[in-house]
Image (cartoon, rainbow, N blue to C red; front, top):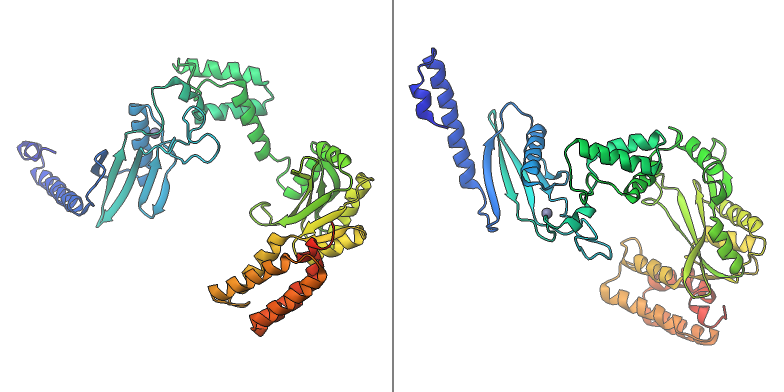
Length: 440
Ligand SMILES: [Zn+2]
């Protein structure tokens, strides 16, 4: 700002001009103050700028800034991550860390750990708002000039919106490819390698798949589920009990491929374990039933979903599974120490051997010895207990087991720990540690 211009202005209200100048000087002083307090930037690629935000809202300022920058540099930035109230960080769209097999190769993934970013830190003081804009615009991990890498670009959001509309209108994949090409050309884009604007049939198919996930047939989820399992997904459903006031939701899922798999292995050893929150949005139980196939791989052959868990419901599911797979009778089943599962299996498959998963046993014991309400043991004591469990597991005969477990209990000394082991685990020995002396 050239202040001399203000003073030399001969505009009518000199008094008013003076006021503006005073404000400008105050702002300038304030900015200088902020600048002095800034941390010293070690990364020489980073440039820092302080601007006064006036008239605009914070988000408006950022949106305009990013848009301008994207246009100018022909790069794209991810949506802001906000780590504190006034701090917003936009990483380069290739800034995510790679997770899969691609190892971050820019021709295979957009997660290239690129270090470029723009960040905004807003500072508000007595009516002024300033923003510290930091930017590091040297892109790493990907090469902006390589046309091969542009195949990995995300679809332009505006075009994506159109593709979704065209899909819901029932246009075919190839029609949509042509339409999107017209759309891109009409907006002046010419680089056919640029996946952001020029889509392949596979891109459109991917959008279609996502769209199907998010468009449910009814606003009420229970109704949606009923429509889906009795309609579109019918061939994958072995049993369905709709959710009502009087009964829980129960779904037994088995795809035709899974049914064939079970037909090939009608007397498998199988594993059963449930997951809850984090996997199903309602926190309902989802049971995974996995068998060991002829090549020794664990493969899921059915899933049970239930809104309420009890032995009776698990047994109902297993019975339904049996009625749809008449030859199915497992040799043995491995579970964690869950009584609901144990009782259900005993009821449906009385001749099946039930084994407790050694991993779950150790996990449960470990949780107990470390928890404050449980063993609350020191690391050394914990080690002794886990070592004792391993000794017991290694027993080959029942006789051995009795000898070892007795001496282990004597050695442990602590009443609390030995009581816990005696009550909860030792009676189950023939199912767990005993799996070595009972033939499966
Ligand atoms: Zn980048």
